Image 1 (cartoon, rainbow, N blue to C red):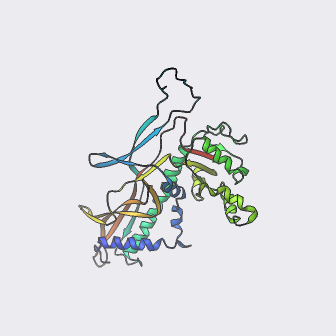
Image 2: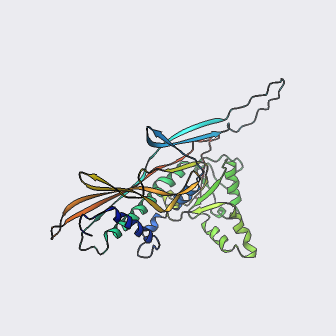
Image 3: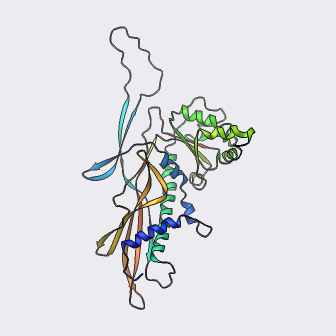
Length: 357
């Protein structure tokens, strides 16, 4: 490609190359694996929140979330009517919460054109760098945003009949459970605990805890004498983040998460079609790039997570034949939010955290 001959079509070609790249991470290209982002993938596609854009003027600055909930639990006071009037009771509580849209994660890369030592085309290098950039965005979303936010939402146990061998007080809100209890035989106790903490629709997220036990249960599911093991897990959604969860939490960790308790949203202003913006410092291109792995439940419809992309061209010199040499700064960011609902009337937050130490 001649120096300065950078057009929107090159970005489009790079987007095609990007689709081809993701067909085969191999032993020579393991970088993309660090962006598996299993916790983010599970939570984003399983959320049940409905979000409404919040506008200031014509600018979307965040989302509105609306909640209605009953009064706190407690011993009911029985009112026996003695007149024709109907007895009154406690009122439900309504909440409207405004959440700001922010840059959740961001990453950068640099590409140079017109290089004799470069054996790949500019479009191929752009596709490669975009792949690496999105890997970084996914990894950081998972490790810096999603997992810490889930951990921060962990609630203290309110089930008074918790198993006597489980410690819910010493390291509260974390519940310490004997290692031997993370099995199909004890899984119903975890399920009951979540129900008694007022979780309505639970998903389970773990690193190594439960992992081997469930793996063996799935292997044995067709063996007559072992079918009950896989059936114990069958009606519960369990996901594993073997790469990031335990490392981020610094211990083996499992979460019970009420999928009604959190909201993710993703906002973009541009489109997938690259657009050139003339600037005093050289050409700038903006477009939206869809993540090939991450999907989110967008008010009942699964949509790809979208990144806002920018690329700025800058001349940094001339080669021996006096052709200009340009560098291209590539900047990607994920704009949106990831928030948990306000604490419930009985101190519910929507997350139970378990460990074995």
